[in-house]
Length: 360
Length: 179
Image (cartoon, rainbow over all chains, first blue to last red; front, top):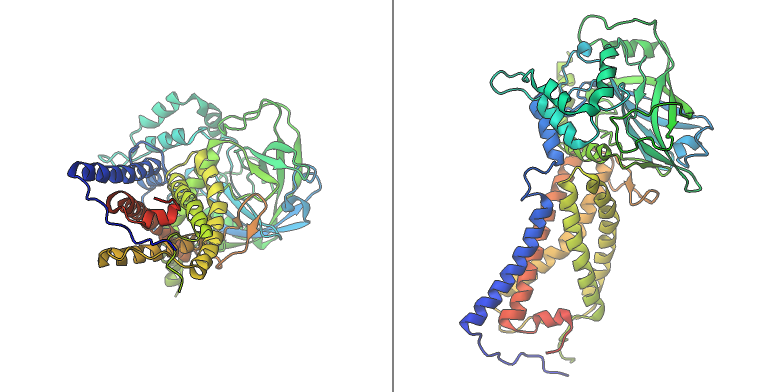
């Protein structure tokens, strides 16, 4: 065997030692520097998940245990009954099984959990479909047909325009008009807002997925779609919101007490040329719409200890057979929701206890 | 008695260099996705999960190789504190290679999310859904990744110290090169 005990090496000259130490330092510094670059340390302007969530906290205050956006809501449960129409387009089990159980959540869009129900015309509906094969489909939908802006950067600017002025505690009234003047892409959203009124019920709204996705068939064929759930219970036209600030949850509980509530799940197939990466743009003209089935809600729970509380309605949790488009808002929603979820998951206990303590 | 080996076993060396690449890539992927809201966040997370499971599988093989082969000894003249630092940092590296993928897997499970390695490959949940547990696991995953990164830097600096300053056999025992 080789004698591997090292023969004594001649000592390094001071200059050689210095160069070698500098080499080691240089290699370590290069790796650490590359890591810091990736981490965003050298780029404080980079939009990060925490930047968006911090902006929401600035605008709404910090409400421990609550979602940083769409904070006020109510949990619901039921199932989805598929029709045959989507089966040729998507291999997802949700469209192929007869029934898929679901947990959902209706909410107001603001990050303030005490916002009056009549304060905004937008309502949202998030759903988690739990397929028998363990895969899930989560989607967060809103009553507006388009998003105000198409990119996370523009959304961040929108949040900043709504930030309270430290001097007055209220947003500067000039900021929002200035934002919309600089963002003409918001025109379709603003046109919708003009006609929208705060509804008296969650049950009468249509909720739009807004972002585009792909249905992927068993044959691997991809079809771009946007989806929406259309309420099957429509009240008389002109039914407006009652007085008070907490009527939506009461209305929902009342309606569910007298029977299940139903929505039709529509999948709008993209035409060639429809924008797939810009949620601020409507799809205009005739479109083929698939009726994928019926979403049925049977029960509700207060969100403080309801089954929806600990669900992050990340729009990129998708089953095999549904895939994301390259809409930049999808990745941003996924990343920011994860940051909000981590913050509130660490705070769940206070939210959980509050209603318990208030009971006699 | 056989003489002490001069090199790590060939399989141990292969695993070391393969995993070195994977782990450094993994640390950069993790840092990049956590600091981004762009599409990069999405494609990095799709790399992060299968790569993490691959590292978990490889570290199990690696520990088996480590326990079933003989290791070249450290130089006899190495100061005692450096011997201790070498041993402690190696076991810390092994522990983190094993724990970080498990934490990642467990935290996704605790969030109640399906553990998807691709569009259709799903792993079972490691723990049941539990939001406060998710918060603890997610934070541990982030902080321990930094500990791993700093330990890797220390390991790199120490290897170069052996190769360039001490000029003993330690670096060669892993590169497999002769003098």
